[in-house]
Amino acid sequence: MVVNDITQKIGKFLKDSNVNLSELSRKAGIPYNLLYASVWDKNRERDLRANELMSICVVFEINPMDFIDNSDSGEEG
Image (cartoon, rainbow, N blue to C red; front, side):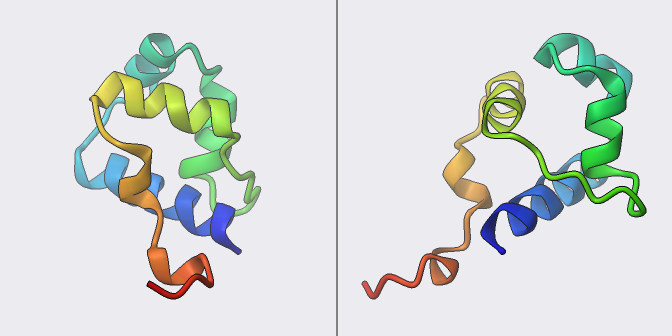
């Protein structure tokens, strides 16, 4: 599923970047417990919502499309 893949990629990005989840929560305006459940807690498997993804991308000044694998779209290019 594309959404799950994006959530996993964001989680990997945050871990690789050694992001402080509390600080990200404050800057992005996303409650800590939702962020944790989405990107670090493997048991809950909550996907990020679109607005949460956008808030994270704004904080890091990155393009959300960087987390989308074009091969997942099913479109031929």
